[in-house]
Amino acid sequence: MTVEYLLTTDDLDEIGHLESPERADPEALLARLLRAVDSDRIADPRDRGYALSLASGIAETELKDLARALDLADRAVEADRASGESIVSARADRARLLHLLGRADEAMAELTALRPLLETDPTASYLVDTLEDTGRVELAERWLTEAARAVMGRVHEPESEEARRAAGAMLYGLVRHRHRIRADLGLPHDDLDDLSDRLDAAGPTPDPAAGTREGLLFWPRADLNALLLRWPALATQLGANWDEHRGVVERELIGLAADGAPGLALVPGSADGFAAHVADGDLDPTDEETVDSYAETLLASLDAMPWPPGRNDPCWCGAGGKYKKCCLPRSRG
Image 1 (cartoon, rainbow, N blue to C red):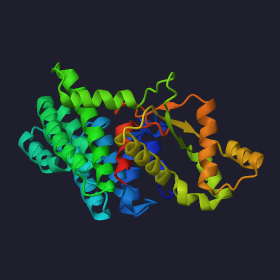
Image 2: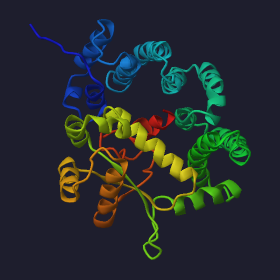
Image 3: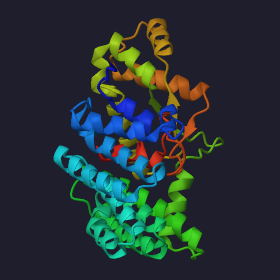
């Protein structure tokens, strides 16, 4: 008798990788996911929608069963809604499947209902991807333009500093996505394209001559686990687990970008290296200044990883998924 354990977020991430060995038997993998969902063997109940979205993707891409994929996408939407998670990604996938099934009007209605979220929810960029996938590239550009101009008003006249940073983060993502689409369409530069260029110039490529580089420390999964095991109090700074940590880092990076910080980059920390840094300086490992000083030593000695990656490039965290599906949505908090 085969014993099946709880599926964790890490397990689901692994299943989501196209190179996962389990993909060799997609029908068995799909059945395993559905058994886990239906028998409450998903470790984090908030991941039920994630598991169902993975199942929908398997039904679509490997089993070529669009009707089954749509049914699973419907279940993913309801699971995300029930758990309080963002339903944007699941609904955008549902719209794409409706389009593939020849139900274009229903697909468009689904995307139109999501359109207002472009101004408030970073994950709403999925609906623009779906517009592109379904051949509505010009419409995607128009929606991004209108959303960017609406958000720009909140940047210039914010209700609070927190609101300004949130609006700045939204604007950053919108204008960069829009800029790429306009380049693909061969459209001339306008003021929002100029803004995107300025943000990119200040972002991933530092100016060595000026010494301008804003770096942020992140911890690979194994190193974070080792740190928290040794110094649990660090969870208040770094996050209680790797998912929380990646969200903390992504939100901080987007906030820095919104503030115009130059040369944004990431450096990976090492648990052993941090322990040595603490011992050498007889420092308090739970003091934020200790973590900051360790980050400064890494920035001075290591090649930093430019941020942000392209939306379809591997995510900076190293989990293996695309940035748009991995850490970009974590900016929502």
